[in-house]
Length: 506
Ligand SMILES: *Cc1c(COP(=O)(O)O)cnc(C)c1O
Image 1 (cartoon, rainbow, N blue to C red):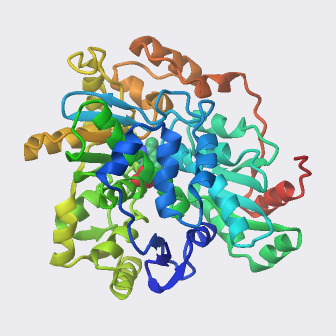
Image 2: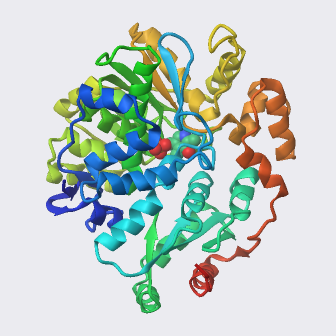
Image 3: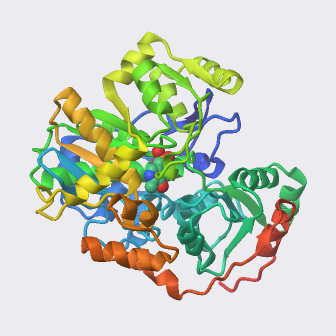
Protein backbone atom coordinates (compact mmCIF):
# COMPACT_ATOMS: atom_id res chain seq x y z
CA UNK A 1 0.00 0.00 0.00
CA UNK A 2 1.29 3.43 -0.93
CA UNK A 3 0.97 6.74 0.89
CA UNK A 4 0.50 10.15 -0.70
CA UNK A 5 0.53 13.71 0.56
CA UNK A 6 -2.82 15.49 0.87
CA UNK A 7 -1.27 18.36 -1.07
CA UNK A 8 0.27 16.37 -3.92
CA UNK A 9 -1.15 12.94 -4.64
CA UNK A 10 1.34 12.18 -7.38
CA UNK A 11 4.14 11.66 -4.86
CA UNK A 12 3.70 8.11 -3.50
CA UNK A 13 5.87 6.54 -0.77
CA UNK A 14 5.81 3.39 1.37
CA UNK A 15 4.46 3.44 4.92
CA UNK A 16 7.98 3.32 6.38
CA UNK A 17 8.94 6.44 4.45
CA UNK A 18 5.73 8.20 5.55
CA UNK A 19 6.59 7.41 9.18
CA UNK A 20 10.20 8.61 8.84
CA UNK A 21 9.11 11.86 7.16
CA UNK A 22 6.24 12.72 9.53
CA UNK A 23 5.04 15.73 7.58
CA UNK A 24 5.21 15.46 3.78
CA UNK A 25 7.88 17.65 2.11
CA UNK A 26 5.14 19.89 0.63
CA UNK A 27 3.65 20.56 4.06
CA UNK A 28 0.78 18.11 3.55
CA UNK A 29 -0.11 15.02 5.58
CA UNK A 30 0.49 11.46 4.43
CA UNK A 31 -2.44 9.09 4.03
CA UNK A 32 -2.94 5.71 2.36
CA UNK A 33 -4.10 5.71 -1.27
CA UNK A 34 -6.71 3.07 -0.49
CA UNK A 35 -8.47 1.93 2.65
CA UNK A 36 -8.01 -1.78 3.41
CA UNK A 37 -11.16 -3.77 3.99
CA UNK A 38 -12.04 -5.66 7.14
CA UNK A 39 -14.87 -8.18 6.74
CA UNK A 40 -17.32 -9.47 9.34
CA UNK A 41 -15.44 -12.78 9.18
CA UNK A 42 -12.23 -10.94 10.02
CA UNK A 43 -13.98 -9.24 12.94
CA UNK A 44 -15.28 -12.58 14.18
CA UNK A 45 -11.74 -13.96 14.11
CA UNK A 46 -10.33 -10.92 15.86
CA UNK A 47 -13.01 -11.03 18.56
CA UNK A 48 -11.42 -14.22 19.90
CA UNK A 49 -7.95 -12.72 20.14
CA UNK A 50 -6.11 -10.60 22.74
CA UNK A 51 -5.48 -6.90 22.13
CA UNK A 52 -1.87 -7.20 20.89
CA UNK A 53 -2.99 -9.60 18.14
CA UNK A 54 -5.98 -7.48 17.13
CA UNK A 55 -3.76 -4.43 16.91
CA UNK A 56 -0.96 -6.15 14.96
CA UNK A 57 -3.50 -7.50 12.46
CA UNK A 58 -5.13 -4.12 11.86
CA UNK A 59 -1.72 -2.44 11.55
CA UNK A 60 -0.57 -5.08 9.06
CA UNK A 61 -3.44 -4.04 6.75
CA UNK A 62 -2.17 -0.45 6.66
CA UNK A 63 1.61 -0.83 7.05
CA UNK A 64 2.20 -3.30 4.26
CA UNK A 65 5.99 -3.04 4.29
CA UNK A 66 5.91 -4.57 7.79
CA UNK A 67 5.05 -8.25 8.29
CA UNK A 68 2.33 -9.35 10.71
CA UNK A 69 4.94 -11.20 12.80
CA UNK A 70 7.11 -8.12 13.01
CA UNK A 71 4.16 -5.94 14.06
CA UNK A 72 3.04 -8.55 16.58
CA UNK A 73 6.48 -8.49 18.21
CA UNK A 74 6.04 -4.71 18.62
CA UNK A 75 2.44 -4.72 19.86
CA UNK A 76 3.28 -7.51 22.31
CA UNK A 77 5.94 -5.30 23.88
CA UNK A 78 4.05 -1.99 23.57
CA UNK A 79 0.81 -3.29 25.12
CA UNK A 80 2.23 -5.71 27.71
CA UNK A 81 0.77 -5.94 31.23
CA UNK A 82 3.65 -3.85 32.68
CA UNK A 83 2.60 -0.95 30.46
CA UNK A 84 -1.20 -1.44 30.43
CA UNK A 85 -2.09 -3.24 33.66
CA UNK A 86 -5.77 -3.84 32.87
CA UNK A 87 -7.70 -6.77 31.47
CA UNK A 88 -8.30 -6.18 27.75
CA UNK A 89 -5.79 -3.26 27.42
CA UNK A 90 -8.56 -0.97 26.08
CA UNK A 91 -11.55 -2.19 28.13
CA UNK A 92 -15.16 -1.34 27.42
CA UNK A 93 -17.35 -0.29 30.36
CA UNK A 94 -21.14 -0.46 30.12
CA UNK A 95 -22.93 2.70 31.27
CA UNK A 96 -26.43 1.81 30.02
CA UNK A 97 -28.00 -0.18 27.15
CA UNK A 98 -26.88 2.38 24.57
CA UNK A 99 -23.74 3.86 26.09
CA UNK A 100 -20.38 2.14 26.46
CA UNK A 101 -17.15 3.87 27.48
CA UNK A 102 -13.91 2.75 25.81
CA UNK A 103 -11.24 3.32 28.46
CA UNK A 104 -8.05 4.32 26.70
CA UNK A 105 -6.22 5.61 29.78
CA UNK A 106 -4.68 2.53 31.38
CA UNK A 107 -1.23 3.09 29.86
CA UNK A 108 1.89 4.49 31.52
CA UNK A 109 0.84 8.16 31.38
CA UNK A 110 -2.91 7.68 31.99
CA UNK A 111 -4.05 9.18 28.66
CA UNK A 112 -4.95 7.66 25.28
CA UNK A 113 -1.80 9.03 23.63
CA UNK A 114 0.06 6.05 25.11
CA UNK A 115 -1.55 3.76 22.51
CA UNK A 116 0.28 5.58 19.74
CA UNK A 117 3.40 6.66 21.60
CA UNK A 118 4.16 3.21 22.99
CA UNK A 119 4.15 1.92 19.39
CA UNK A 120 5.81 4.81 17.55
CA UNK A 121 9.38 4.06 18.78
CA UNK A 122 9.19 0.54 17.33
CA UNK A 123 7.61 1.75 14.10
CA UNK A 124 10.07 4.61 13.74
CA UNK A 125 13.27 2.66 14.43
CA UNK A 126 12.15 -0.14 12.08
CA UNK A 127 11.19 2.42 9.43
CA UNK A 128 14.64 4.02 9.63
CA UNK A 129 16.21 0.60 8.95
CA UNK A 130 13.77 -0.15 6.10
CA UNK A 131 14.54 3.16 4.43
CA UNK A 132 18.29 2.69 4.86
CA UNK A 133 18.89 5.52 7.33
CA UNK A 134 21.87 4.54 9.44
CA UNK A 135 21.65 7.15 12.18
CA UNK A 136 20.59 7.41 15.77
CA UNK A 137 17.39 9.44 15.94
CA UNK A 138 16.93 12.37 18.34
CA UNK A 139 13.25 13.11 19.03
CA UNK A 140 12.51 16.72 19.91
CA UNK A 141 9.23 17.59 21.59
CA UNK A 142 7.75 20.85 22.81
CA UNK A 143 4.82 20.08 25.07
CA UNK A 144 2.14 21.81 27.07
CA UNK A 145 1.77 18.65 29.16
CA UNK A 146 0.45 15.29 27.99
CA UNK A 147 2.32 14.62 24.76
CA UNK A 148 5.77 15.16 26.28
CA UNK A 149 5.29 12.60 29.01
CA UNK A 150 3.71 10.04 26.68
CA UNK A 151 6.63 10.46 24.23
CA UNK A 152 9.19 10.13 27.06
CA UNK A 153 7.58 6.90 28.26
CA UNK A 154 7.52 5.56 24.72
CA UNK A 155 11.12 6.35 23.81
CA UNK A 156 12.85 5.82 27.18
CA UNK A 157 15.69 3.30 26.72
CA UNK A 158 14.65 2.41 23.16
CA UNK A 159 17.81 1.45 21.23
CA UNK A 160 18.80 3.81 18.47
CA UNK A 161 16.83 6.75 19.89
CA UNK A 162 17.25 9.68 22.26
CA UNK A 163 14.53 12.05 23.31
CA UNK A 164 14.57 15.66 24.46
CA UNK A 165 11.42 17.32 25.83
CA UNK A 166 10.92 21.03 26.50
CA UNK A 167 8.03 22.37 28.53
CA UNK A 168 7.17 25.97 29.47
CA UNK A 169 8.37 26.80 33.00
CA UNK A 170 5.24 27.15 35.12
CA UNK A 171 3.03 26.39 32.13
CA UNK A 172 1.97 22.86 33.05
CA UNK A 173 0.18 21.42 36.06
CA UNK A 174 2.52 20.36 38.85
CA UNK A 175 1.54 16.72 38.32
CA UNK A 176 2.41 16.99 34.63
CA UNK A 177 5.75 18.59 35.53
CA UNK A 178 6.52 15.82 38.03
CA UNK A 179 5.62 13.18 35.45
CA UNK A 180 8.28 14.60 33.13
CA UNK A 181 11.14 15.64 35.44
CA UNK A 182 11.18 12.27 37.22
CA UNK A 183 11.40 10.32 33.94
CA UNK A 184 13.73 7.29 33.99
CA UNK A 185 15.90 6.25 31.05
CA UNK A 186 19.53 6.68 29.96
CA UNK A 187 18.50 8.35 26.67
CA UNK A 188 16.09 11.01 27.94
CA UNK A 189 16.49 14.73 28.59
CA UNK A 190 13.90 17.18 29.92
CA UNK A 191 14.20 20.93 30.43
CA UNK A 192 11.88 23.77 31.39
CA UNK A 193 12.04 26.80 29.11
CA UNK A 194 11.50 30.35 30.36
CA UNK A 195 8.39 31.59 28.58
CA UNK A 196 5.12 30.06 27.44
CA UNK A 197 4.30 27.06 25.23
CA UNK A 198 4.75 29.10 22.04
CA UNK A 199 8.29 30.01 23.12
CA UNK A 200 9.15 26.36 23.69
CA UNK A 201 7.54 25.35 20.38
CA UNK A 202 9.22 28.13 18.41
CA UNK A 203 12.55 27.14 19.96
CA UNK A 204 12.07 23.56 18.80
CA UNK A 205 11.02 24.70 15.33
CA UNK A 206 14.13 26.87 15.08
CA UNK A 207 16.32 23.86 15.88
CA UNK A 208 14.47 21.74 13.29
CA UNK A 209 14.97 24.28 10.51
CA UNK A 210 18.65 24.99 11.29
CA UNK A 211 20.41 23.29 8.35
CA UNK A 212 23.90 23.89 9.72
CA UNK A 213 22.96 22.23 12.98
CA UNK A 214 21.42 19.27 11.14
CA UNK A 215 24.69 18.81 9.24
CA UNK A 216 26.66 19.00 12.48
CA UNK A 217 24.44 16.33 14.04
CA UNK A 218 24.63 14.14 10.93
CA UNK A 219 28.42 14.29 11.22
CA UNK A 220 28.09 12.83 14.72
CA UNK A 221 25.66 10.16 13.46
CA UNK A 222 22.37 11.71 14.58
CA UNK A 223 19.12 12.66 12.87
CA UNK A 224 16.41 14.93 14.32
CA UNK A 225 12.81 13.75 14.25
CA UNK A 226 9.52 14.59 15.93
CA UNK A 227 6.75 12.61 17.58
CA UNK A 228 3.88 14.95 16.82
CA UNK A 229 0.38 13.85 16.09
CA UNK A 230 0.29 14.33 12.34
CA UNK A 231 2.67 11.37 11.83
CA UNK A 232 0.82 8.42 10.27
CA UNK A 233 2.73 6.22 12.74
CA UNK A 234 0.70 7.83 15.51
CA UNK A 235 -2.66 7.57 13.76
CA UNK A 236 -2.50 3.92 12.64
CA UNK A 237 -2.28 2.37 16.15
CA UNK A 238 -5.42 4.31 17.09
CA UNK A 239 -7.50 2.69 14.33
CA UNK A 240 -6.87 -0.66 16.01
CA UNK A 241 -8.64 0.20 19.26
CA UNK A 242 -11.88 1.08 17.49
CA UNK A 243 -11.80 -2.26 15.68
CA UNK A 244 -11.09 -3.88 19.03
CA UNK A 245 -13.97 -1.97 20.66
CA UNK A 246 -16.39 -3.30 18.05
CA UNK A 247 -15.24 -6.87 18.81
CA UNK A 248 -15.78 -6.24 22.51
CA UNK A 249 -19.27 -4.80 21.91
CA UNK A 250 -20.11 -8.11 20.22
CA UNK A 251 -18.41 -10.14 22.95
CA UNK A 252 -20.35 -8.20 25.61
CA UNK A 253 -23.65 -8.96 23.89
CA UNK A 254 -24.35 -5.26 23.31
CA UNK A 255 -24.79 -5.94 19.58
CA UNK A 256 -24.84 -8.86 17.18
CA UNK A 257 -21.97 -9.21 14.70
CA UNK A 258 -22.76 -6.92 11.78
CA UNK A 259 -25.03 -4.55 13.72
CA UNK A 260 -23.97 -0.90 13.61
CA UNK A 261 -22.66 1.21 16.46
CA UNK A 262 -21.98 4.94 16.86
CA UNK A 263 -18.65 6.30 18.08
CA UNK A 264 -18.32 9.55 20.04
CA UNK A 265 -14.88 11.13 20.54
CA UNK A 266 -13.82 14.18 22.58
CA UNK A 267 -11.75 15.98 19.98
CA UNK A 268 -8.89 18.47 19.73
CA UNK A 269 -6.51 17.94 16.85
CA UNK A 270 -9.00 15.57 15.12
CA UNK A 271 -6.58 12.62 15.25
CA UNK A 272 -8.51 10.29 17.51
CA UNK A 273 -11.85 10.72 15.71
CA UNK A 274 -10.15 10.39 12.31
CA UNK A 275 -8.91 6.97 13.46
CA UNK A 276 -12.57 6.04 14.13
CA UNK A 277 -13.47 7.26 10.62
CA UNK A 278 -10.79 4.97 9.16
CA UNK A 279 -12.08 2.02 11.20
CA UNK A 280 -15.55 2.71 9.78
CA UNK A 281 -14.30 2.90 6.20
CA UNK A 282 -12.39 -0.37 6.62
CA UNK A 283 -15.76 -2.01 7.17
CA UNK A 284 -16.41 -1.84 10.90
CA UNK A 285 -20.21 -1.29 11.08
CA UNK A 286 -20.52 2.31 12.28
CA UNK A 287 -23.44 4.69 11.66
CA UNK A 288 -22.54 8.08 13.09
CA UNK A 289 -19.26 9.53 14.27
CA UNK A 290 -20.00 12.12 16.95
CA UNK A 291 -17.40 14.86 17.32
CA UNK A 292 -17.40 16.43 20.79
CA UNK A 293 -15.79 19.80 21.50
CA UNK A 294 -15.42 21.87 24.64
CA UNK A 295 -16.04 25.64 24.71
CA UNK A 296 -13.58 25.95 21.81
CA UNK A 297 -16.27 24.87 19.38
CA UNK A 298 -14.57 25.47 16.03
CA UNK A 299 -15.19 21.87 14.90
CA UNK A 300 -18.84 21.84 15.99
CA UNK A 301 -19.52 24.98 13.98
CA UNK A 302 -17.68 23.53 10.99
CA UNK A 303 -19.55 20.23 10.97
CA UNK A 304 -22.92 21.89 11.55
CA UNK A 305 -22.46 24.83 9.17
CA UNK A 306 -19.67 24.08 6.69
CA UNK A 307 -17.44 27.02 7.59
CA UNK A 308 -14.18 26.55 9.48
CA UNK A 309 -13.30 29.83 11.19
CA UNK A 310 -10.43 30.11 13.63
CA UNK A 311 -10.90 33.87 14.06
CA UNK A 312 -12.47 33.61 17.49
CA UNK A 313 -11.47 33.85 21.13
CA UNK A 314 -9.33 31.05 22.53
CA UNK A 315 -10.63 29.71 25.84
CA UNK A 316 -8.52 27.96 28.45
CA UNK A 317 -10.76 25.19 29.76
CA UNK A 318 -10.70 22.31 32.23
CA UNK A 319 -10.15 19.97 29.26
CA UNK A 320 -6.88 21.56 28.08
CA UNK A 321 -5.94 18.84 25.58
CA UNK A 322 -8.95 19.94 23.50
CA UNK A 323 -8.12 23.66 23.61
CA UNK A 324 -7.19 23.92 19.94
CA UNK A 325 -8.26 26.29 17.16
CA UNK A 326 -6.46 24.60 14.27
CA UNK A 327 -7.19 20.87 14.12
CA UNK A 328 -4.35 19.68 11.89
CA UNK A 329 -5.67 16.19 11.21
CA UNK A 330 -8.87 17.60 9.70
CA UNK A 331 -6.81 18.10 6.53
CA UNK A 332 -6.86 14.34 5.91
CA UNK A 333 -10.66 14.20 6.14
CA UNK A 334 -11.07 17.23 3.85
CA UNK A 335 -8.88 15.56 1.27
CA UNK A 336 -11.08 12.46 1.30
CA UNK A 337 -14.28 14.55 1.22
CA UNK A 338 -13.16 16.44 -1.89
CA UNK A 339 -12.54 13.17 -3.75
CA UNK A 340 -8.76 13.31 -3.34
CA UNK A 341 -8.50 16.54 -5.28
CA UNK A 342 -5.15 17.91 -4.03
CA UNK A 343 -5.56 21.21 -5.84
CA UNK A 344 -8.92 21.87 -4.22
CA UNK A 345 -7.53 20.88 -0.82
CA UNK A 346 -4.56 23.22 -1.28
CA UNK A 347 -7.00 26.05 -2.01
CA UNK A 348 -8.80 25.50 1.29
CA UNK A 349 -5.54 25.31 3.25
CA UNK A 350 -4.31 28.49 1.60
CA UNK A 351 -7.52 30.28 2.64
CA UNK A 352 -7.02 29.03 6.18
CA UNK A 353 -3.50 30.42 6.15
CA UNK A 354 -4.43 33.77 4.62
CA UNK A 355 -7.83 34.49 6.17
CA UNK A 356 -8.05 32.01 9.02
CA UNK A 357 -11.22 30.53 7.53
CA UNK A 358 -12.71 28.60 4.64
CA UNK A 359 -16.10 27.18 3.61
CA UNK A 360 -16.68 23.85 1.92
CA UNK A 361 -19.16 23.40 -0.94
CA UNK A 362 -22.59 21.75 -0.47
CA UNK A 363 -21.39 18.43 -1.92
CA UNK A 364 -18.59 18.16 0.64
CA UNK A 365 -20.82 19.36 3.46
CA UNK A 366 -23.43 16.74 2.55
CA UNK A 367 -20.85 13.97 2.74
CA UNK A 368 -19.48 15.33 6.01
CA UNK A 369 -22.89 15.51 7.68
CA UNK A 370 -23.91 12.07 6.43
CA UNK A 371 -21.20 10.60 8.64
CA UNK A 372 -20.51 13.10 11.40
CA UNK A 373 -22.66 14.70 14.07
CA UNK A 374 -21.14 17.33 16.34
CA UNK A 375 -21.76 19.12 19.59
CA UNK A 376 -19.98 21.24 22.18
CA UNK A 377 -20.14 21.59 25.90
CA UNK A 378 -19.63 24.52 28.30
CA UNK A 379 -17.44 24.44 31.40
CA UNK A 380 -20.53 24.29 33.63
CA UNK A 381 -21.94 21.34 31.70
CA UNK A 382 -18.58 19.57 31.88
CA UNK A 383 -18.58 19.89 35.68
CA UNK A 384 -22.24 18.93 36.01
CA UNK A 385 -21.79 15.87 33.83
CA UNK A 386 -18.89 14.63 35.98
CA UNK A 387 -21.09 14.92 39.08
CA UNK A 388 -24.19 13.38 37.49
CA UNK A 389 -22.24 10.46 36.05
CA UNK A 390 -20.44 9.83 39.34
CA UNK A 391 -23.67 10.03 41.36
CA UNK A 392 -25.91 8.07 39.02
CA UNK A 393 -26.22 4.81 40.88
CA UNK A 394 -28.69 3.68 38.21
CA UNK A 395 -25.97 2.66 35.78
CA UNK A 396 -22.63 0.93 35.79
CA UNK A 397 -23.61 -1.88 38.19
CA UNK A 398 -24.89 0.67 40.66
CA UNK A 399 -21.50 2.33 41.20
CA UNK A 400 -21.81 5.39 39.01
CA UNK A 401 -19.03 6.26 36.60
CA UNK A 402 -16.30 8.86 37.12
CA UNK A 403 -15.15 10.49 33.87
CA UNK A 404 -12.24 12.90 33.52
CA UNK A 405 -12.95 16.39 32.13
CA UNK A 406 -12.31 15.41 28.48
CA UNK A 407 -14.44 12.28 28.70
CA UNK A 408 -17.14 14.33 30.40
CA UNK A 409 -17.34 16.55 27.31
CA UNK A 410 -17.72 13.41 25.19
CA UNK A 411 -20.49 12.01 27.41
CA UNK A 412 -22.42 15.29 27.57
CA UNK A 413 -22.32 15.72 23.78
CA UNK A 414 -23.32 12.07 23.34
CA UNK A 415 -26.36 12.34 25.64
CA UNK A 416 -27.43 15.60 23.96
CA UNK A 417 -27.16 13.88 20.58
CA UNK A 418 -29.09 10.85 21.76
CA UNK A 419 -32.04 12.92 22.99
CA UNK A 420 -31.97 15.33 20.06
CA UNK A 421 -31.91 12.66 17.37
CA UNK A 422 -33.76 9.93 19.31
CA UNK A 423 -30.90 7.64 18.26
CA UNK A 424 -30.44 4.74 20.67
CA UNK A 425 -27.85 2.95 18.52
CA UNK A 426 -25.32 1.39 20.94
CA UNK A 427 -22.54 3.94 21.15
CA UNK A 428 -18.87 3.76 22.11
CA UNK A 429 -17.68 6.95 23.84
CA UNK A 430 -13.89 7.24 23.88
CA UNK A 431 -12.49 7.99 27.33
CA UNK A 432 -9.23 9.76 26.72
CA UNK A 433 -7.76 10.29 30.20
CA UNK A 434 -7.92 9.04 33.77
CA UNK A 435 -9.92 11.29 36.14
CA UNK A 436 -6.93 11.13 38.52
CA UNK A 437 -4.93 13.15 36.02
CA UNK A 438 -7.28 16.11 36.46
CA UNK A 439 -8.00 16.19 40.22
CA UNK A 440 -7.89 19.98 40.14
CA UNK A 441 -11.13 20.03 38.12
CA UNK A 442 -12.70 16.68 39.02
CA UNK A 443 -12.67 17.27 42.81
CA UNK A 444 -14.50 20.64 42.59
CA UNK A 445 -17.04 19.04 40.24
CA UNK A 446 -17.79 16.61 43.07
CA UNK A 447 -18.15 19.52 45.51
CA UNK A 448 -14.70 19.13 47.06
CA UNK A 449 -11.90 21.60 47.74
CA UNK A 450 -8.66 21.45 45.79
CA UNK A 451 -5.29 21.45 47.55
CA UNK A 452 -1.67 22.38 46.84
CA UNK A 453 -0.68 18.80 47.58
CA UNK A 454 -1.28 16.75 44.42
CA UNK A 455 -0.85 13.45 46.23
CA UNK A 456 -3.40 14.41 48.88
CA UNK A 457 -5.86 15.12 46.05
CA UNK A 458 -5.21 11.71 44.49
CA UNK A 459 -5.96 10.07 47.86
CA UNK A 460 -9.07 12.16 48.38
CA UNK A 461 -10.48 11.29 44.96
CA UNK A 462 -9.80 7.63 45.63
CA UNK A 463 -11.53 7.81 49.03
CA UNK A 464 -14.57 9.51 47.54
CA UNK A 465 -15.02 7.13 44.63
CA UNK A 466 -13.55 3.86 45.80
CA UNK A 467 -11.35 3.80 42.67
CA UNK A 468 -7.66 2.95 43.11
CA UNK A 469 -5.10 5.69 42.41
CA UNK A 470 -3.15 4.72 39.25
CA UNK A 471 0.22 3.55 40.50
CA UNK A 472 2.05 5.48 37.80
CA UNK A 473 0.76 8.70 39.40
CA UNK A 474 1.12 7.82 43.10
CA UNK A 475 4.67 6.52 42.63
CA UNK A 476 5.84 9.97 41.52
CA UNK A 477 5.81 11.06 45.16
CA UNK A 478 8.88 8.94 45.89
CA UNK A 479 10.82 9.69 42.73
CA UNK A 480 13.74 12.10 42.60
CA UNK A 481 13.45 15.13 40.33
CA UNK A 482 16.17 14.33 37.80
CA UNK A 483 15.77 17.33 35.51
CA UNK A 484 15.72 20.67 37.29
CA UNK A 485 17.23 22.93 34.61
CA UNK A 486 15.31 26.02 33.58
CA UNK A 487 16.84 27.42 30.39
CA UNK A 488 16.49 30.48 28.19
CA UNK A 489 15.09 29.89 24.73
CA UNK A 490 18.55 30.69 23.34
CA UNK A 491 20.04 27.79 25.34
CA UNK A 492 17.76 25.06 24.00
CA UNK A 493 20.33 23.90 21.49
CA UNK A 494 22.86 23.43 24.30
CA UNK A 495 20.38 21.14 26.01
CA UNK A 496 20.09 19.03 22.84
CA UNK A 497 23.88 19.00 22.56
CA UNK A 498 24.26 17.75 26.11
CA UNK A 499 21.95 14.84 25.25
CA UNK A 500 23.72 14.08 21.98
CA UNK A 501 27.14 14.14 23.65
CA UNK A 502 25.99 11.95 26.52
CA UNK A 503 27.69 8.56 26.62
CA UNK A 504 25.09 5.82 26.76
CA UNK A 505 26.08 2.25 27.55
CA UNK A 506 23.57 0.07 25.77
C1 LIG B 1 -4.80 14.77 23.00
C2 LIG B 1 -6.05 14.61 23.81
C3 LIG B 1 -7.35 14.80 23.27
C4 LIG B 1 -7.57 15.25 21.83
O1 LIG B 1 -7.26 14.24 20.93
P1 LIG B 1 -7.09 14.59 19.35
O2 LIG B 1 -6.57 13.36 18.74
O3 LIG B 1 -6.11 15.72 19.32
O4 LIG B 1 -8.44 14.99 18.86
C5 LIG B 1 -8.46 14.56 24.07
N1 LIG B 1 -8.32 14.18 25.37
C6 LIG B 1 -7.10 14.00 25.93
C7 LIG B 1 -7.02 13.61 27.37
C8 LIG B 1 -5.92 14.20 25.19
O5 LIG B 1 -4.71 14.03 25.78
